[in-house]
Image 1 (tube, helix red, strand yellow):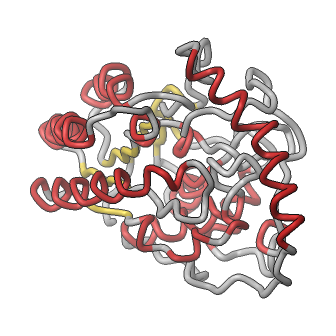
Image 2 (cartoon, helix red, strand yellow; image 1 turned 45 degrees about the horizontal axis):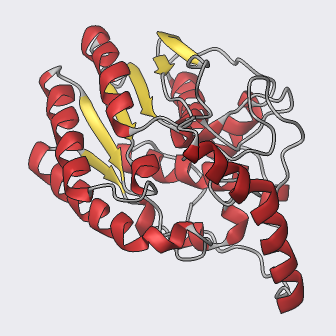
Length: 298
């Protein structure tokens, strides 16, 4: 995208970067990876990331969109609504109407807008139960992007994300390799040249025996699903009490020891296959302020 000098990323945990963990325990994510790439190309490039884990669409609209209207960056990326879709009884059409109004507001502020569809959750237990709702919401998002001249990053159309290695152990957030591929796909949509292809096939792995798969499902239920259900019943969000990691629009500066390498990987600078591409990735530590094994909403 020629002439891109400022970008504000808004949304939920997907854009915040869970569970792409840097060596210092902070989160990197596709957005920081791409921002580092853009900053290398133009040192004057400015970036803010207002996304917070657990945010519902209405919270993103009320809390983050007004900031974008005030600073008027060249580009705003928005991915929101996933947390709403997994709430029983949520109205997909109503969510789409709210999302469209947000896009209209952002376009009226003079911003180029990039929206993201949800990935296909057919390989994810529990979340795949709302696969139909995700598909309908995605259809709305494609139509909204078309009506208002927004760019679209279609995660549903990325079959590499169906592989379990694209996901973290909580099965709700992307692994480091998943984020890397999404950064590459977003670069492609923006017309930013990179040297690697997000379509690269995963290395072959031996199939997991049925019994071991069921053991893993039971462990996931105890460690992630049940705490998540209890949190939902209490009306709590993992983002409660937290602040955005990059709240100000300013020149990109590495805020953790992992961003430099992460960005180099997203540009295809570093050769070889990362550990996340050959097996399931386990984050080395839990960032300060997180809730341990309790999985956040998307």
